[in-house]
Length: 108
Length: 83
Image (cartoon, rainbow over all chains, first blue to last red; front, side):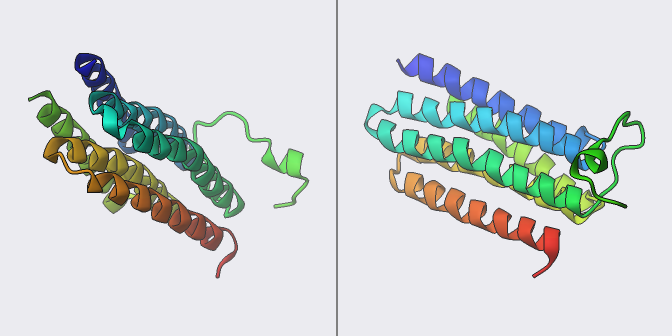
């Protein structure tokens, strides 16, 4: 059981490192939101659940923390992306299509 | 022994996030880097609680995640329409 928890913590730590490298490498605000949110949500979920598996008395509290991270992290990233879109921060110059004005009906 | 290696891996990711927070061109980049850094450090706090065998670190990480969520919502409101 302890080895299984260690494997979970290892996979989670690898996902956290990959998400951080994605934050550094990506060229644009929106690409950074993509890289950062998905990788760190899965990585922190696996790491916290892995700690609960290694130490079985702590399992319910780690489950509460993991579910809270799983709910709150996409919400805050969505709020940041929506705010930076309304602020009209420009896209990466190799971006192909942008239909935000067409859908929302705003004029520039 | 394996926990030490995992703690070093997560700390390397945290340092890369802080580098983007220093370098970031706009304010939204810094806010997103701070979002990622808080999520990484919640996982790091839980793992440090396993490493030092202290149950209190779970409470610390739970309160830290709640406060970072509220602060990021406030930063997003400020970016969108000002105070």
